[in-house]
Image (tube, rainbow, N blue to C red):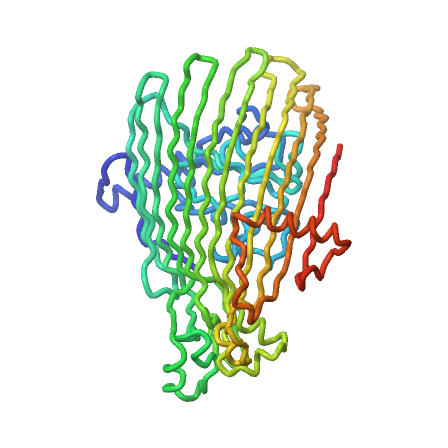
Length: 528
């Protein structure tokens, strides 16, 4: 959908050349780029991508820059057997490997687990985020189970973003920019950013990058009501005056503004020890869903959606990661520690869904509904890995993994004006409130042993033992007309839901407690 108009990248300044010379240089650069051999660490050892005995694809930083790849979907379009369902930033883009996808295609809103059965690593830390491809050394894509090499679950495969580390060999400033146009968009889109590398001491360096992308979008919302609960959502579409007094058109309603950045400090106190501390930040302000719909009562056309309410969403990802590598002589020891935080805050139009349920909403002439959704996720990861480095026909890998994941979210559904229409006093517009909390604790031990029979033949045997303990709680309230109802905020969901669940168990009830549906489950599993 996007056409690239202009892209500029410079190590320090932008240089313009004659067209003929530029063409010749581009051809030379392309030949050199194709001749480059990409070194990968997918097997936990540095090898040429051509020599790795796995189904792997790798895209180097030079290729990402040369091809103008902005996001993971751009890369995966050229990898057989894996693809991304592009639903825009508002709904998330699940990754499907060889037809395998654990997540339903309709479960993208407010969900940060779009990886499904595919583990996504940022450096050495597992975390799913559709990271912008800025200042990366390479992207590696492995297909098939990788559970004996990686701590996180990798039933379908693994995707690794390998960021460029701070360099000790000199200072650097890189400035980049891109201008593009969506075919159906009113405005241009652009992306700009910079990377700086600063050597503080011979064994200490800092690297930082900041990027800002403004994607104008291309899907219009032509039927947004001017005042929720007052304006007619289905006016006489043959009467321009009636339409104009009730509805407004929002152009390019699925636009997106993304601010992303990274700052890393690398220290090598001795020749055999290397550590990097990194902070990642990515915030996306998404204006609406990338969806096209048509209903019999709404004359929606191509690249138009019949939403009655705008659907903004704010998504923030943060990660603090500490990676330490030690050369022990006989093996390389790697420790990766990560803490990540995900926050989601947005709203969705619910008008058509509720009307279709025939709960008498259709009797209210100016009925319009929307849902406010908010969620957060906190994750702590620790992975330790020991990889043999001696020259021998035998090679081995052993590792341990720990993950603690807490998730809380709520969905508050509002029907402005409906309680007044029913004559409920005092009026209250919150008619549905759903809340959810879960906590997961996971650990694993994994490893493999290989033997090189000849230079071309090898045998590898691996195994994995993992354990996880999951607790999840949910509840649904129907507070329509209850002006005294106070919804629980995200930060209080854990204590609120656990208290409700304990009270329900004590009363011998699984649901229907105080007019509220409540459920809970505790799962523990150990697998070899």
